[in-house]
Amino acid sequence: MKRPPKHDYKEGHSVELLQSGESLFSAVERVIDKANRYIHFQTYIIDEDETGRRIVKALARASRRGVRVYLLIDAFGTKYLTKEFIDEIEDSGILFRFFSPVFITKGFQLSLRLHHKVVMADGEVAIIGGMNFADRYRGSSSVKAWLDFAVLIRGPECIHVNSICRKLWNKTFLSKGERATEIVYSTSSYEQNISLRVVENNWYRNKIEILRSYRTALKNARHHMIIFASYFLPGRLERKLFRLASARGVDIRIVLAAKSDAPMFKRATGFLYQYILHNNIKIYEYYPANLHAKVATVDGKWCTIGSYNLNHISDYGSIEMNVNIMDDAFTSGFEKKLAEIMKNDCRQVTVEEYLRRRTWWTRLRGWTSYQMIRLLMRIMAQMTSKKGK
Image 1 (cartoon, rainbow, N blue to C red):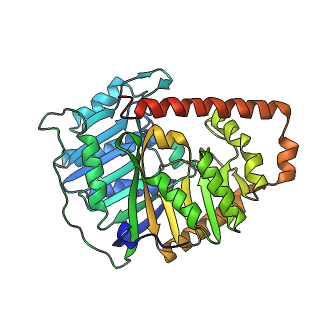
Image 2 (image 1 turned 60 degrees about the horizontal axis):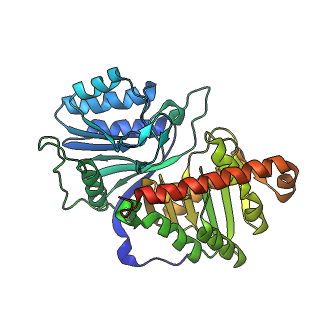
Image 3 (image 1 turned 180 degrees about the vertical axis):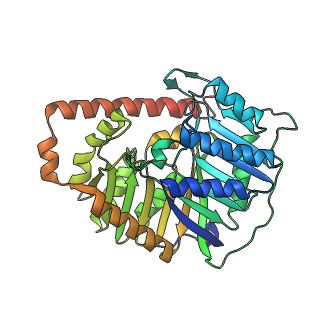
């Protein structure tokens, strides 16, 4: 892969890869417990279960020792919290609010959603990934965790993450005492010296940085590309870029969910299998649990990890955050981990197997799901554009 312009990436970072399961939530808890001044905690979902309560208790401990805690949760993703649990959060001293509660009724929403998952402490350390905060992402001795990834970063780009979190928290008319005022001007650099860039998608603010990252990766890939995609439904331009990359000899492997928590999306993705396989792109399905990962690697040199799904819902309807990493050692190690998962926990969908699965009924259901989701995407694009407002 060609190296992007150097000024896009900052050097001097320490990066730790995190995978869903107990280790991820232990890392989050450590970051919270070590915070001295303030914490920004922003996510799509916190469930009122053992894992969600564990994280909220950690935030409450931080608040009681004098740390300012800003907790921002999406109003649609976390719409089932009880009043008692919300009262517990607010009584602990945590500064708490829901993001964008407008246009929401039971099971339906049409406004921009907060989909990124970020924990930022003191402007010095951040965890950015795709996992929400619920039991299904932590798993247990008898139930495997949903597969997803995050990175813990330290270094100069934390200044940018801090700014993003502060602006999102301050978006509404808050009282002076509730506003986040902490600004970071400099941070330490680390010997690991990894180059990275934090990128956003926020259609309302004309930011499509993550989508552009994927397009650039597809254009510049030379040897191989691995994509783990939980809700995979690329647009026409992205499908064309996949086709062109494969045609010039790039070995593309896409890992999708064997079973999904979003059946309609799974059927819509299945409608694209014929196109993908016809263009000599390999499909694998992940079986042990739900696949929730949204990551990609290219040529052992570049990778992206975060909350962004390769579909137009993430493009037009959600605020997303990814970390793009340009480092041979880190990316090669990540590729090895993904390859191991593909070998041990996935099964390749061959053309022959796809043809065995295909019936007129599955094709009809797939086509119908695909068209319905495309319509929803168009509506979201209109509802979240500045012209629409």
